[in-house]
Length: 136
Image (tube, rainbow, N blue to C red):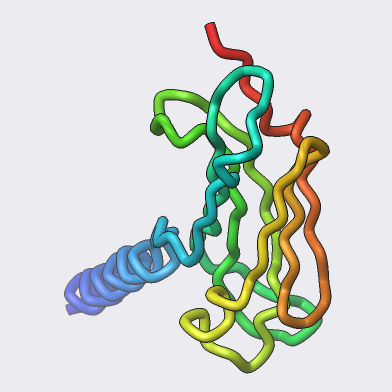
């Protein structure tokens, strides 16, 4: 009889682990994307795009809550076969939903790099040296 109780407990633990892995996995959902303007040409003739991608859950020690992490990925628009630059960054979404917050981001591209202005006034700057890919 004890082995049945132990088997049930083990089954519940395994189910909870599988459920936890499923719920905590990154979604890879693109929340926002912007590409460099046509008039801006880098010396390697590649056109770059910036994407905010939804990651997995993490625990925020300041608010004692779980929230999804976000990554800013800047890469040539040719595709995933060319690497780019990734920055994990916690946008100041506050009480807004992602659907309301991310469309309000403003991107400014220039020779020095990419600046992303949040509706809160925070600015994230990625220097072009960080995402610049030398074409072969």
